[in-house]
Amino acid sequence: MPELWQFTKLIRSKNAGPFELTFDIMFKDRDSFERVLASGALSVETIAEIYRTNPDQVRFFRIDKLLAVKITIPRRVFSGDLKDTDIYGGQFHGPLVQLQVAV
Amino acid sequence: MLTQKLKAVAATGNLSTGFREETLIRAVKDGAHFVGCDAGTTDSGPYYLGSGKPRGPREGVKRNLRLILREALNAGIPVIVGTAGHAGGRPHLEWTVDIVRELAKENDWHFKLAAIDSEVEKEVLAQALDRGEIAPLSPTPRLQREDILQAKRFVAMMGIEPIQRALQSGAQIVIAGRCSDVAIYAALPVLQGIPKAVAFHAGKILECGAASAAQRLYPDCMSAELDQDGFTVEPPNPALRCTPQSVAAHTLYETGDPYLLVESGGTLNTVEAKFEAASDRAVRVSGSRFLPSAEYTVRIEGAALVGYRAIVVAGIRDPLVLRQLDSFLSNLRTVIERKVEDSLKLAANQYTLTFRVYGRDGSMGDAEPIGKVEGHEVGLIIDVVASSQAVAADIIPIASHTGLHTPIPEHDGLISNFAYPFSPGGIDAGPVYQFCANHVWRLNDPCMPFKMSLCDL
Image 1: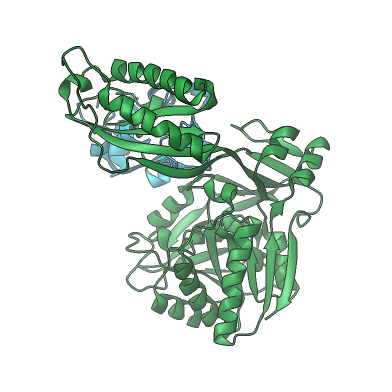
Image 2: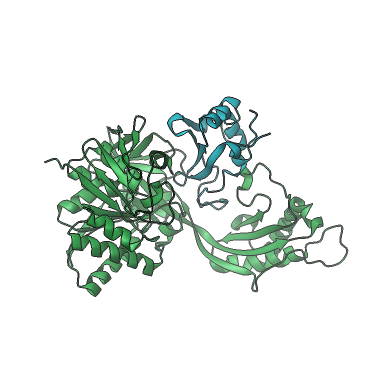
């Protein structure tokens, strides 16, 4: 099954301040953007499941004019707290790269 | 009087990372009205705010400030530096002002300097909390009176008004403590009559320097020309170019919401912003709106000391250990806790012992969906945080020696499970802080918490 990275030109995660994580997904072209979103692979529910957070805490933005999706979730562990593993939040996008997309 | 056109130059995205000298010279010569530079962020964690230590290198910051001051003084235009010394606390501000004074002396430069202190005394903040002026954002750590008094340091994040006050006082060089990145670039244009919608959106694009270019080859300057209806952003370095896509995409960067940017005094709304090519390297941005807020608030940041860290790094390569790694580490923890109790008289709840396993879930912790070892080796960091550096350093050899010789059923006799790359193995990692506030402070006067000092150099 195709993976998300095959449809995108950028998948990244980053802190949006020390208490939130934000994911930016930029698609290669309109066709890839439409197909992935129509497949349902990338949704509030899948993000909530992967990152084990409550769906009503997932902010999901479809940005048509940029062929982009932006997703913001609260950090389970705040940046710099004792159990934090990623101060900048720069590697939390890892599981999204290989997200299975049924197109 | 309304200014027709106003040119803002961002020297770079962070004062410590630098820019090309020739780019800054070109950008200022091209009619800049001021040069701004952000010098900090919370991205690198709570250490800098907590410890009061700036993030250098000092020589690099001095080089960059020297070039910025030289070009701006030659052109007779202001310089605005925000979030001095990385965290914008009082020691960070003093560190940066000290560099500016040194440069003025070395180069026989003369100007009026404003330093804006954004550190908030704990008692002042506690009183504001008592008066109900402090409100939590979400998600947030607990912040009650005793948390404030036990924390190490707080800063308030200034909006445009304290910078405007410094400029109106005649300061040519403004060094600000904790400051909104956007305010660095919006303060002067708004003072000159540029609408907030234009000035704040331009600020958001400029604050990372050349990062809004299509391909940022290295850290460098960015310029924007602002007018009543919008702004045109164009990299002063001819090797870089902005495209409508690259500038629009930058509007997303590091913000939780792609359309709404909450700033002190109001919210920038970019839902209807238009990004159009003005040339093959320049982009025209228009159509944003600014919605003033009913109340004026500033963000509060704080850091509290939580202990002192010591670590040891090890590799594990034995496939038999790896296939039972979770139970192996669980047994190891039990034995370490027992030995620490016996030899140091410390219960397990008096320190924090964390096994960070690279090759299992080192990067994502318990958010890791795979969460098991799939490779032929793992990297392990044994991470101890205790009440003093000496205690943390005492626990490390107990943990590392125990780990080395913890048995597994498949091997008879004494084994050595861990590959330690260093001697000594233990590394003192120093004090550990945590962010202890994600709050806003409601103000009647936007300048109230910010103490400005002026001097003629």
